[in-house]
Image (cartoon, rainbow over all chains, first blue to last red):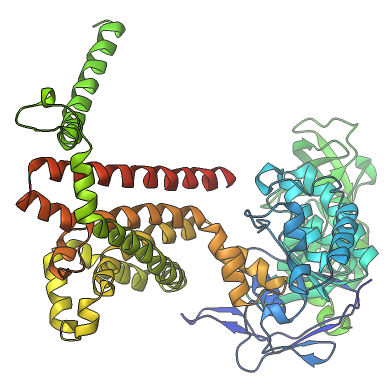
Length: 357
Length: 262
């Protein structure tokens, strides 16, 4: 139902009046119909990027924003036909639910019958049937965000922009609404840019994720690429938990000596540190173990448990394993790390260049 | 002290204070309705004085109402955009401007009026018209509109609402009229209450600016106290009360109505 557009940012930087650079000049191409997630800690420039795309802010002089190759840099947000969903809902408290949704449609001067049809349609899509006459302050947080979503898609925008839309909701509601947003984006096939600091949200929603750090894109790629082949230690740390294994010495036959044992990883020869995810480490019988240590602590997580294992290094090794076997503190444990799960960020190609388009 | 005794004492004190404040009002109202105040109530009640005041001073009452309403319109038309401008400007500037706006309230009304006379008094037409007094009233009441409106604007997260409206295609004027103004309505009503009250009761500036043909109610009141029987002045007060009390109640009721909606 939407004619979605591609978005291109060219050398879009943003420096504020005090000289603070929120965003270093940035190139970014978002394909039509794609969902791109901007992920990062607060102050990383993700919201600034979103606001540059929306037209709420202008890039520094050399920056260009294009929708379908057309330069929209000088256009204010009201001329860009973008739908926006905010963290704090930004619903108009002086209007009821239906009037909020109709707001953009009235501006387009659509006939009353069509306005009503569209209101009914988007309210059905967002599970809001029967809420039209409700006042905004009578709604729960989740309902408010649905209304905001309905209001944004009712005008049939070319792009949907989300600014941490779920951050103000409690965990359960967040999961439900995230699934609904994912479904909606699929249904609409609309280009979407989604800002969040929550990695699970980013993984679930993004066709691609741009991890941002200090006003730059640290890595751009599919969720799989970002998770399994992080381009930098920052990305590796920010997305999920990661273990650092300092290499103590080179062993025989391409083996590397680490705290607690030896690892076989020919592709990482010469590296000073190896990285791996907690879920990629297996618990094995002591006599077959490549690495041995003692359990310091176990944290029960329901579907799994996280063990902290002391191997003699500064930081204990984090290991995820099945939650049925109970581990006591001090118990000896044997671990195995398959070579293919070990990685070293700097070794990866910068996916930024590879994954364009 | 038992709770009951404390309650009785508090009630007694409250009633005493009420009495202290209400008795003069009642006496004044009664004086306006008594045949002869010095003889007392036994001389009989009458509406004669009220009639007489109406015959002598009705034009001052109409002028006061006209002034108050005109003043309200002007302070809304100037004050709401001004508050919006202050909201959008840097906090330091906004504070400085807000304080400057308060100056006409702090400076004695006579001084403000004198300044107006010195600056614009020689434009005869203007000086003789009621608009000259209106200027004085607007100067005096404008901060009472701007401050509550600005306070509501600051608390209403207007910037965010405006961004949402803009994302839906609303240009500046549409945003201003459909989002900004409706969402600071409670501030506008609170301001309106102050502006109307202050304008109707304003004496200092008005006394300096008035001409024999343009007297407001308080100026007329001073005139009648100075030159007429006490009963006339009191009847005048009665009319003033009858006029202003329903007005204030209406505005407060409106305020509560919009207060509930948010």
